[in-house]
Structure formats: C-alpha cells, structure tokens
Length: 586
Image (cartoon, rainbow, N blue to C red):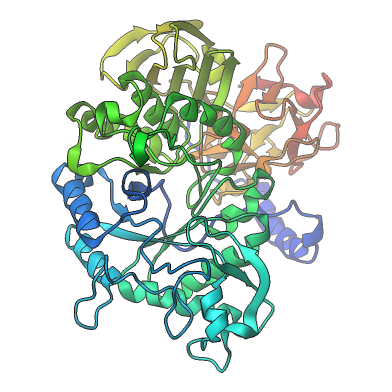
C-alpha cells in the first residue's frame, strides 16, 4: 500500500472547516441519517453464546444432581475447553402447585422447588447449583416468563424496598407460561412495576445467575423485555438476556436493542419419542425449517445481539434423531448464521463422533466470528450461504436440503465475492480441496453439507476516481470512527484514499465501505464501518465502471448528480449510467 503524504494547506483548512461543520451539524441533527440501530449494551454476548440447556433432554425433571452432572460432563468432556460455558436450567425449577400460577416468596418472585433443588442452610437451592457450575469454571443460566404470578396477586405480596404491592402493578390479562400457567401482565406505567422486576433480577444476581431466558415473549411483551433489560443492568452482575420464542421479525430492532438474542421460530425438538421419551431429540424436518429463517433474519444479528435458531441436537448419536451428515449440517447452518450454540443433548452420554463435531475449532470459529451469512443460492434442494470474514476470507456453506436423495449443489463464486482461483479448505475434514474458480459444484449425500473457507484476496490497494470530477473516494481526515460518512476529494495518494477490493468488500484503513444502517433506498448514505460480512458491505465492480451494492442493487453515486466539489458526499442511487456513478482505478 502506498503511504499517505502530509496534509497540504488546503487539507489543513479542510480540517478547520470540518470542526465548524461539526458545530453546524449539532444544530441540525434532524437532517442527518437516523442513528445505526444498536444492540443490548450490557457488556456480554459480543459473540454467540456457547453452552447447554436442560429442556431438550431433561425436560420436566431438572434436579440439582442432574444439573451438576451435566456441568461436570461439560468440563470433563473438553467442551468447556473449546468455549462452551453456559449451563442453563429451563422450566420446572420453581414450585408449580396448579393453575393459580407459580408459588412465590414474600416479594412475589417465583419460589424454588426445594424438593428438587434443596437449600443448603440459608442458601437457596438454585444458588447451590450455580455455585457448583461456577466451581467447574462455567456460567449458570435460569428461566422466567413475562408478568407476575396470580399467587402474588392473590396474596398481594409486597414489592421489595417499596411501599407498593402486587395488586398495584398487576393487570387482568393473561401472560404466557407454557407449563405452569397462572401468570398475568404487569402495567409498567404503575409505580413499583420496575422495582418488582429489579428485585427479581437482584435475587438472581445474588444467586450467581449469568444468563436469563424469558420464554413466551411476543410483541405485546416489549414492556417486560425493557424492564428485564434495565433490571439486569442495574443488578451489578453481567447477565446475558435471551428471548423466546418465535419472535416477530418486524420488531427485530427492538429485540436487538434490549436483549442479547432472540428465538426466530418454534422449538427445534420433534416431540416424537414414544412413551414421553426425550429421544429422538429432533428430526430433519425441524432443521429444514431453519434455512428460510436464517435467510430472512440475516440483516438483524450482530455483536451483542444474535438470531437464535434454538438448541443444537448433536451429541447422542442416533438418539439425536439426525444422521451424521444432518448433524454436521445443523452445526454448519447455525455457525454460518452466527447463532448461539446451546446444546440440548445429554452430556453425560456423549457419542464420540458427535463430540468430535462439537469440538471442531474451525467450525466453531465460523460461528464465533459474529457474522451472519447471506443465502446466495436457493434452488429447491440446493442451498448455499456465504459470508466474508473480517480478514477478507470467505466462508461458503453448500447444503443438500433433501433428506432423501443426493444432490449436486452449484454456486457462482463471484456471488460470494470469490475471484481468481483461491485454494479452498474443507472445514469438516481440515483438508484442502485445491483451487476453485468460476462455478463450483459438489455432489452431497442426503442432508449433507460442505463447509469451505477461501483465503483473503490479494488485491492491490488503489484509488477510486469519479469520472465526473476526477476526485477520489475519500475517508474524511482518515477518520476511523465507525459510521464516518464518505465523500470525494482531490486525489492525493493518502492512505484514506487507498482501497482494496477483496471478497466483494471495499476496505480502507481496516474498515469496510458500508450502506448506512442497512439502507436500500435511493439516497442512502455510504460510510466506513467495522467489517461484519453483512450484505450491505458487499459490492460488485461492473465492467461499465459502476459499483453496485449487493443488498440494494443501487449504484455508488456522487451526491447531487454533478461533478461534485471537494467534500461532496457519496450515496446509493438508482443506476442511471451517469458519469457521477462511474469510477476508474488509479
């Protein structure tokens, strides 16, 4: 890469003007683009959660001994050593005497079932289990549902630390509690409502809880989600907040703002075992449902807040309900989607082959990159997803959607941003498959996958010169703050005008050219942002000199349609063949 030259006089003037412009901008915030949607800011969940949950295998019968044994198995199997850390109790940890709702303590919070989670002196039984999990070097999670128990309302229990009571905040509307029932809503406009959730969160924090799952959440429960987000953050303990289940995609921004993850669909379990058995845990049909979900939810996941496609049912061999190929496909699809990998299997009876799948570090790295893949092929039983890593390498997942017949799956590599003839590595076998180029095809057994990585391209740094003005695509003052809007400026060979085109991304100063806030409409501003592999950072260089955004199909355009003076912004606009949409490399 060429190095930048010192700032010229007019560049120094420009810096002064930039300060003045910032002052003016502060007085005119209404005309600026809307702020980028932000994720839950509780300091956890920056990468997808890895761990285990009791629901799939244990279901209705969690006990302290069972949870302790699963935690020990996670440690002793080596799963903890490769990153699996959460051990989560799902439903049935609390007393449920009947349809009147969960039993409660003096402050209206669910009471622990002491017959299955016995106390140790004055220490609550859940806190005892959390201590055991922590002693294994792991983290502990628990389950709740929205609202307040009818038992708390009937007893009109006090709200800890306040003069308010349950009846002051309860509504008459029912809330979802799938197995116990008996929950009613909370009116969060009432004094004491937030204090009630705060007291519950504080109790969890005192027990050593690291993860809270709120089940039964719908669009009518935004108040509960906000309250729990606030409560957990004020508790003084970093606690991951997960939402379940089948959340509305139209409210994705809300779920991302207030939680670390959200279930995109119903349960992955098949509930098809005989005589109430947990086995088989799932079936291929339940995995197939997730392909469309991964494609639809791709724009919404990212560091701090992830799309959750439910439990990984890999670990118990044939009892998983999936063939070996289908187990690899489930893990691959979830990894391509940067989904939490929360195991639903019995960790005390791990199948050795499955354990190898779960500990595959190359596949885990695909998940932990925190980048959601885009679907680039959806042709019947042929499914292909791709994403570009922060280092410019490309991950390709080629899937046979059919569970009954072999399929040849093909992909135009250019659609994934792969140019030239890079060598590809199969991440499941660890072996090189040699150079790939043009259109790549592979024949896959029923339900099988091939997961490939190609290295970053070696494109030389270059300047992009506007055909209309002769000025260069420029990052103002070499500003590396994510979200900096881009412009054109006299070409000066500085590092902030040097770009590399690799894997479909345009990069400068370690950041990626980005359609602001996932915008797909004409006039969307273009900025520099942390490389995340999302489709709003994917660009196609066309033979006529235009550059189109993969997500929007719009052209990179100098604002205003004319030649453009120094400092003129760049944006996305409907492709029209104008010289302000054509770029040459210098």
